[in-house]
Length: 372
Image (cartoon, rainbow, N blue to C red; front, side):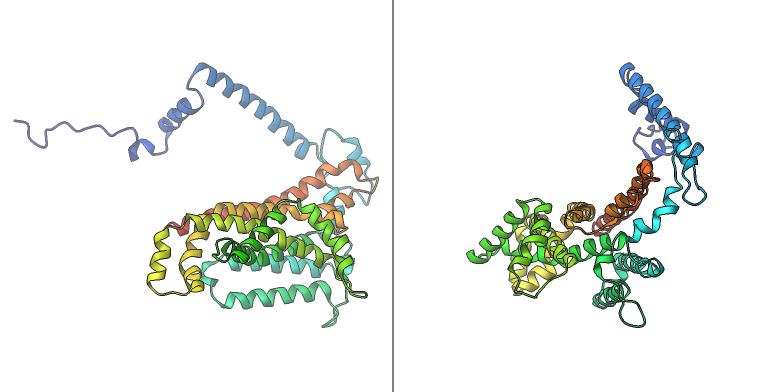
């Protein structure tokens, strides 16, 4: 009889922890399974690697080795001599202040810069779960008041700057932040209204959502800029930035309402019955039980809407507001720098990417935390 110690040991399965450990053997198996599984797959892999390698080499040569990083004054002769062979990054230090802050007074541009840093700090604080208390509302209120003081001025010895001089990154952050901050609660109310048992409320919410979602954002901005002042009394004039902000809030509220409504439908009916059995009121039931579960279900589409909305702020060009992308386009009107628009657009693309990537990473972390 074979003893226990002499019994043959079963080999570890391929999907065991040992087989998944990093090492040369694992890498080779992964390459064979995913990139070189057959002759056709191997051929496609080699072709793609060659093409990507050539593209990467060309990009490095254009963006680094042959690039011009600085020029004396506004002399662009060095940039023109390497045009087509290398990038002219000298346009960025020459135009970055106009790109970021537009026509804001040059000697006062520290104020919109500080406002942008305040926005970023506010986003960071809001992303920390340790700050998710009632005091966060006060932090938001104080930060927004500070941003308003910095941008407008007129008090504390700051020079008054009208909204016509605002532009660049602060305008993009203002439109996106206020649009989402007010559009999100509006979307929650509309989503609940669409599920209401009262026909009047349900019909009104359906009409609002279908009307806003049925037209492009450009038409809403055009209506807010051109048509809305026609309905105001004589002598009453609302600033165009505020009109654009209202259009963004209404637009965001309609789209977020449909996302949240999908989350509400995903909550099991038993949760509603349990809340009713506890004797909770309508608002307590939704605020404490239903809505937290619904929002947890739709974190990815919510963040996708946030990212799309942040990029849609560039459409305010149609009503004469200079956002980040518009100031970038305007900065290269100068004939001396006009041939180097690609470098300017890449600079702006990096800024958009940093904000959108940060939102995407935060949503993944938040979704992972809510699963536990």
